[in-house]
Image: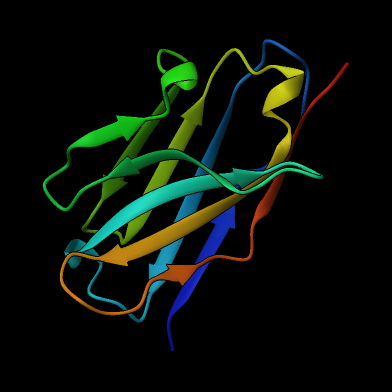
Length: 117
């Protein structure tokens, strides 16, 4: 059974930081591109950042310099470090695993991030 479990969300003041974690099980983690997506109320889900099996990272343009994605293949973990959070960053953040070759992708259940004073 494949599971992606996010943690680390919560309420933070604008300008603060959070680190999201995604624990994967049931997949050969090192063979999956890992991504973080977010969805705010009334908006479409959007890609925040991704990291390939080789460790190449891609962060959405507007978030570069504030968000960083990383992975630890030994622990089957993916991370999203978010700094200088803004109210517009508030959303449910989802972990995604997409196989390098053919196959289905997987999603976590999401974790709420709220940046508000």
